[in-house]
Length: 450
Ligand code: SF4
Ligand code: SF4
Image: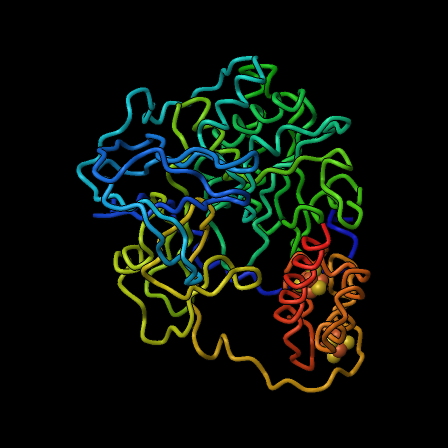
C-alpha cells in the first residue's frame, strides 16, 4: 500500500506544466522593495538609514522579537526610503527601498558552485548561523527556522521530515530544486538533522516526481560514502494526494502519528522543514550566504512562457512578468502560490517576499465559480477535510453570526485553509472563504480573552 495521510484529501489534476523548466536566474531589477514583514511573528527593525550604501547579503533589519528574523539586502545600491508600501494583498507593510547599483556582494560569501559537504559539529553554532542568515520556512508558513529547530523544554525531536511533496497543482520549484540542487538539499538536511541531535531524517516526495525520488536516493548513497554524517537519511515515496505537503498530513503519512487539535508537530516528536529551506540552510552554513533569493514558479496555461526563476527578494512582480513577456490579455487573476492555498495578488507593483514560491495566472473561465445553492447535506466536504472537520457545520455556524464559541468548540482554528471542502462541494458554497473569516473572528475572541 502506498503511504499517505489517513484522513480526507482530494486528487486535483496536478497541471505541472512548468516541470521541465530549469531554474534560471532572473536579472537583477533596477530597484527592490524589501518588506520588514517577511515572516510569521514580529516585523524586523531596520538597521540602515536612508542614503546608506549596502551590499548584497548585508543585514538591513534585525529581529523585532523572539519569533522574528533578520532581513538582508538582496542587491547592492543605495537605500532610498524606509516607509510603508502596499504588499501583495494591498496592505501597507514597512519596506526598505533600495536603488540598485552594480552587483557587489558582501565579502566572505562563496558564490562558486563547488559542493561543500563537511560542516562543523557545534550544533549551537550552526543554529546561530541559521538565525543570523534570516532563514524562514519556505514551504509557505515562513516561520523563523532557528525557532523551529529549538524544541521547547520537555519536547524532543524524534524525526526530521524534509517536505518534498509540493502537492499543490502547478508548482514545480521544489521539484526543480530536488533535481538541480539535490546534493545541497541533502547536505542542508544533514545539517538540520545534526542540530536536532542526529535524529533519523525522511525526505518525503510524492510519487508524481519519480525522477526526483531516484535522484535523491542516488545522492544520499553517494554522500554516505563521503561521510557518516549522511547516514540515517532516507527518501519515502508518498502517494500523490492533496494536501500531502501539509505539515500534519505529512507527519501522519511518514510517522503514522496524529498531531492533536491545537497541537504542534514537536508534540509527536516531529520537525518538518521544506526542501527549499534545507537548501537555504546549506547556503547559509556552507556558503555564508544569507537568504536573499528564492525560486519562483511562474506558470498558467494562459501565460506565454512557463518558468522557474531564481529571484532576488524584493523584486517587483511587474519586473518578473515583463521579463517573461507581460500579462496575457486572457489572464483574469494572478495568484501568489498555488490554486488551492495561494492568495490573489491585488497589486502587481508589490514585491516578492522570502516565501513567494509561485505566480499563477488564471483565465476568467478558470476562476469562475458556479452559482451557490443550498447545502444538500451530502457530507462530501467532511469526507474531504484532512483535518477531520465538518466544514458544512462551520459554514452554518459562521453564517448564523454570534456563534464564535461554538465555532471554537468545533475546532475552526484547526482549519489549514487547504480548500478541499470548497473543491468538493456540489452546491458551490464558498466554504473556505466563510471559514477563513470565521477563523479570524475566533482568533480575535481568543486574544481578547487572554
Ligand atoms: S479548508 Fe479547512 S475546513 Fe476546508 S477542508 Fe481544508 S482544513 Fe477542512
Ligand atoms: S459538500 Fe457542500 S452540499 Fe455537501 S454537505 Fe458540504 S457544504 Fe453541504
